[in-house]
Image (tube, rainbow, N blue to C red; front, top):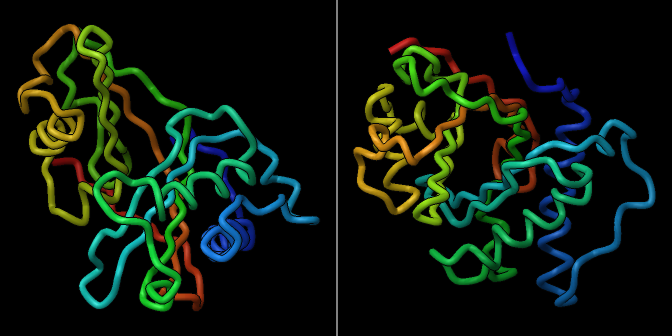
Length: 210
């Protein structure tokens, strides 16, 4: 059973368009844009959100930042995550305005985090294509998150998915056996441009129990 509130395609399209517009505004004016004067009321809900930027034709990552936990409205967090993905991802330089015509914007809305039980095999508690993973190791001051689409895009099985989220947290890739680390799963709803600044669709991942 899904744990994420469902958002309509029109609401998803609004967020993706807002994401692109927010980056355009920031690059031009060097400040955050104001909230839209009108928007779907459902986007006042609180939910975690990630924004991913990819460049064509190879779909290379150009930036990805977000908020795993719901602490503000989607409309506000979308603006913030979009600008941070474009200009504050430490892996990349800030996006330049002339790049935007070659960048695809993707918005992922997250469900609440569901803690995995440490006394049960982790791989029995997740499904590839449905779940993303978050690992939090407070004793080491480290955490890492991988969206559900990462596992399907890279063809990860469950064992590899857990190893990779450990690596994302800059931990040993066997941190799945460290009782100081807590693992969480979450579901998502993904809205993405088909091509830069064009039609927007909802992406549906195939669930795989492997």
